[in-house]
Image (cartoon, rainbow, N blue to C red):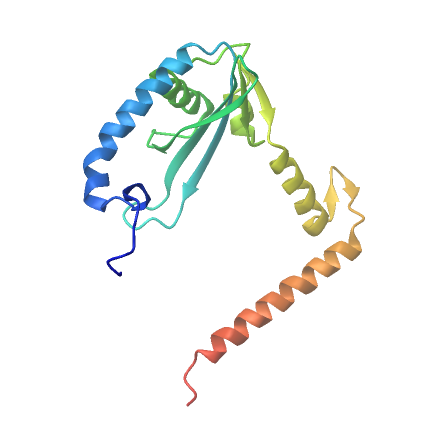
Length: 194
């Protein structure tokens, strides 16, 4: 850089060491502010998502829970807060255990699910059962659409009725065949020429 170049100090990213020294303190500060805000909320909607990471190095099949809090403030401004992505290390994945896990996390933020609160989750039977009591569960529209597309492209029958999507299924099968052929060709290119 030339000596005539001026740089605003605010534009420089902090050193990773500086970040690592201060990140826990900043997290505690902002969490305290969020807890104060949560205590003032009469209504909110929680989005819960559970998944299992099957490709972890040290532990096979670690499970996680992501919780997102949605709220409309008194000025009708939509607010969304990621409460966190929490490792799910409970003994089982039954509805009562999952609900207890989510309730404990919410309690740490001063929140509680009741008949006035909404929760959005996927449409799996375990999630339906987990959030069927003391709150209003909303099914995820993404999951509904995904299931419809899955049935249209792969199912032969749904509830005893024929799926009449032959053209879509033929196209889907052709695309799958083309993709697998292209992948195989790419793998073959990497093989030795001998």
